[in-house]
Picture 1 (cartoon, one colour):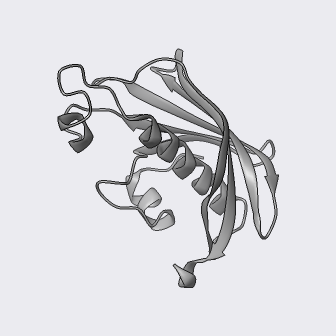
Picture 2 (picture 1 turned 180 degrees about the vertical axis):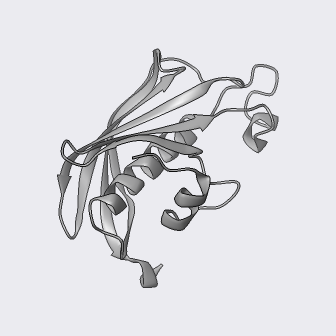
Length: 147
């Protein structure tokens, strides 16, 4: 199942400048897994202040983009009345810098889901080749109306 930006805006509460997913290109609810795309451009506001002479995407934003893809997977697994919020991030390893012009392929695979929260294994690939970061993200599920 693919989702365009209009579909993503219906699922995630994030908006500019914090919406970091442009498209969902693959979903497998049986595994469960999902793949999203983030087109990284020099026009992103964070490049103006994050190593402006050698711009790289901040690692915390890479993890946020991965968490957003994971949040879409949670939604598609049947938790439409809840929002996933960070509990913790473990085993995060930053392997290659993300630069303007790169296309990030954001992979998330469900490890555990329950009505209270869960955990996903995530990986961002630069141009679907080199690993930028991988980690495990745990989240709590909270009612949408409480946010």
